[in-house]
Amino acid sequence: MVDNTHQDIDPATGTATTGHEWDGIKELNTPLPKWWLYILYATMIWSVGYWILYPAIPLPGGHTRGMLGWSARGAVTADLQDLQGQRSEMVAKLNGSTLQQIAADPKLAEFARAYGRSAFYVNCAPCHGANGQGSRGYPNLTGDRWLWGGKLEQISQTITHGARSGDPDGHEGNMPAFGKDGILTKEQIDQVANFVFSLSHPTNEDVSAGKKIFADNCSPCHGDNAKGNPDVGAPNLTTKIWLYGGDKATIIETLTGGRGGHMPAWGSKLDPATIKSLTVFVHSLGGGQ
Image 1 (tube, rainbow, N blue to C red):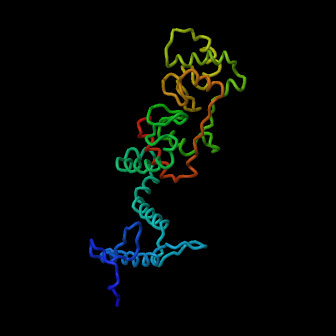
Image 2: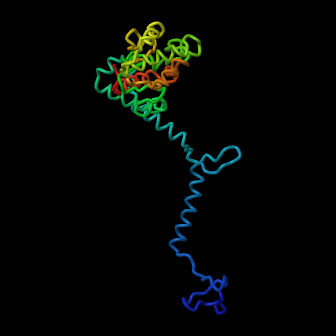
């Protein structure tokens, strides 16, 4: 039994003190509320149960696995397997259909676009942007301007085998380095840059010298009318849509050092159904031919 006869009682509250005092301030001996203590004890009991049932305690060789055998990786794997089961019927239809058949079937095309959108965000958006709008050096997939063609079969070919990817069936065209390789002089490069710039920015200046140089050196790829050639990945130079920039300084930079971007060959990384879905999705962005 506690003897309270010699305890110090706070005159203002009538509560006993603990005997601790700081600068004249005395600490009251006020117990914690019972409801608060009950919650504390309940959380302690819950934590012990959690340690037993789930992985929780780090050890030198790993961690405790828990009696339930649960793991975050296992939960994700189970969710993915469940999702694959839900998609299995439609994925089988994708595998058994041509691109034209997929595009002609509204339900299958809708599934392919949704499936392809997910694959695009994971694999393609880091370069082409979340909406396929592209950036400097990465083509805009939403406009009707294609280096290698915008038909379903052409898009599928590009996705599957890439460009300059090392795949023997991939696209291999390059923009020559006319300046670095000594093909053209600085003066000639300046003249042809003036002509190329005038194709999308009409001018009254005389660009005939650059036009002749273009005909002799550039037209085999870009065409006599500079409209480009998807067979070799040569872009259309008559529009204001540019992969690296259309100002004269950038054109000179391109002519001098050449260009040759890299597109991965996704055929070795993604399954056929995903490739088909990506093809349909990219085609649907607004620039498919």
